[in-house]
Length: 403
Image (tube, rainbow, N blue to C red; front, side, top):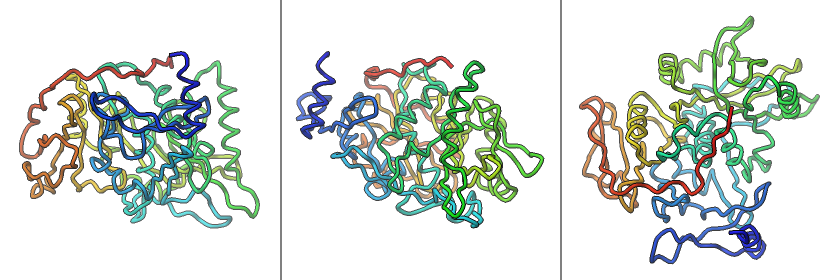
């Protein structure tokens, strides 16, 4: 449609609201036009993704399916007029001169354990993963996701997002795919960004936010270091206190990652550059993903997600954000079971008394009415709900990017 870019540009200028006609016979879900760095894009209105057909590219499960629900409108405020989303964080993005910053991994106010109406580090990573639609899966995506694709989607997701009144992209560092031929250019771009976090006498030091895949966490000559994939010429310093807390807080993730070579371990961290120009990790959180970059919490979660991928199902992976692990949330939402999503739950031993397979009080209102439940302690994984129609392929399939 050659006139489409001009049409949405005019719609943006006149504050017009396009409608998505994904549901035949319905008036259409209202959308809005947002400006991005390279043009305009049509976006769904805040918290309306569930109003779209499950095979529509604009569909999102209800926020209450995941830990996103309590954060919408408080920690995450989207403005359809400006297209800007404001994010409230529960961790600092500056370091005051002379003040020692106690490492937060594993503390009562850590990004993993935080409660309330702000985004912890893990919740921010979950939000970016959701916004990048890396939680979505269709059979046609197989073989199309690599780090270059993940990085591009995350950077696009960070556009038009602000924290503390500043653009999120200005402080976000995601390593580029390493290339020997491009080593100098990559290093120059990296140093240009890191220079923003260099200490300045008498002024608060800005911190950078890094999202990267961990290759190794190991002892260094002094303290410990995190080695990042696609960044062979630079390690990140961890002091002993942060390293000890890391082991306590993420014991499950680290144990599973160390024994399963197909899993990716993602790090989200605030980093600062010291006087010697060495990047140091201030606060961090970890997230496991499958080989398809779909997030998982533990081995049971992984077993379910990989069964869904293996059987060619279409689904959206649910994320916990700030929620504790003992709170019942939808593990994944199947999108190929009819007009409404089918929520999938995994019950664990510590919440056996709340299983209630026939109780709809734990189900968001948009579910199909029949939740699939599995308690690994009591039984093998039951058969997944039957597919009622073949999900339509994505209108904009993820392009293959050569690493």
